[in-house]
Image (cartoon, rainbow, N blue to C red):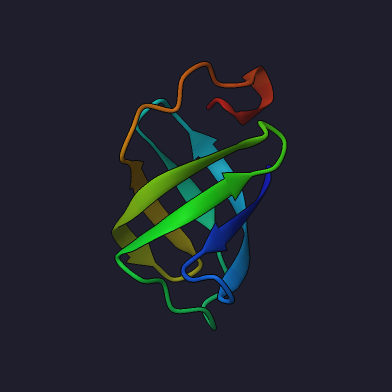
Length: 79
């Protein structure tokens, strides 16, 4: 699921949501992008934005937690 990470008004980074739950997600993101500890993630398919925190980062993948529960997850985003 395509998504966009917004670390500031001008700093936007494309990513892909690989696994999504109410409390967080696993995302794919290019190694060339550094992530701040806190940011907004905009999940276009679900038409939602959530404040998130970086939990872990390994290569081109990262785990994030949402500040507020995500709510119902579209079936194609669930793993």
